[in-house]
Each structure stands twice: as structure tokens, then as C-alpha cells.
Image (cartoon, rainbow, N blue to C red; front, side):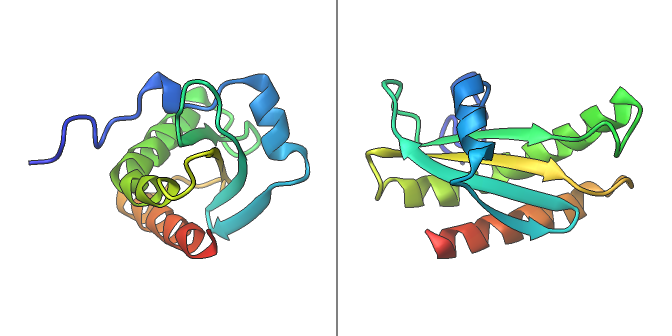
Amino acid sequence: MAALGLFTLPKKERLCNRKEIDLLFGGASRSLAAYPLRMVYTMVPRGHDGVPLRMMVSVPKRCFKRAVKRNRVKRQVREAYRHVKADVGRLMETHPEETLLLAFVWLDSCLCDSATVSAKMTNLLERLCERL
């Protein structure tokens, strides 16, 4: 049985602070792509809350005009992230003074099935672990 809280995504692990988002998309960040997903990431000093990972999902309006489809893609990406975030979390234990900020941006104007999104997410996070 999985440990309690292993496959959750609490509010404190979501990136919603405007200053952190500006820092992430500023210029010191790096990016990886596995079409239809692009991941932007950067490391920042860890704050007082002690969270090692923060993530956000962005689905542009130009990809899907209807909010229903944008929300579906966001749910798929968050679900895929929840299932593989433990690997990156273990890696971040070796960096106790830093927080990893992640942003997942959807690039395609077509819907994908959840298995495809999950495979792309796994690919991105494995490549991220190799770089860190």
C-alpha cells in the first residue's frame, strides 16, 4: 500500500505566487519538450514552508477556445504528474536548501488520451532527473 500522501497534490505544492511565476518565466529557467508538453523549470532558494517542489499547468486559450477542454487537459497533466512526482521528490532531498519550480505548458490544439499524457510526463521528469 502506498504511503499516505504520496500521490496527492496539496495546495502548498502548487505554484500560484506571482513573484515565483515571474522568476520561473523570467530568464534563468530551462526548458524541456516532449510534444505536446513543454516543461519549464528553475531552482530557487527554499522558503519558510520547506516545500521541495512546486508546479503549475498552463493551457493557452489559443489551443482550446472552450474552457471545458482546457480544464480536461489540466486535469490530465496534474494526474500524470501526481503519479511520477515521487522520483523527483527523492532527488530534491539531496538539495535541502532549494525548491524546484515546474511549469507544464500544453502546445497542441488536439486532445490526447491520458496514457499519452502520462507517458510524456514520465519522459520529461526522467530527463529532468538526469539533468539535475
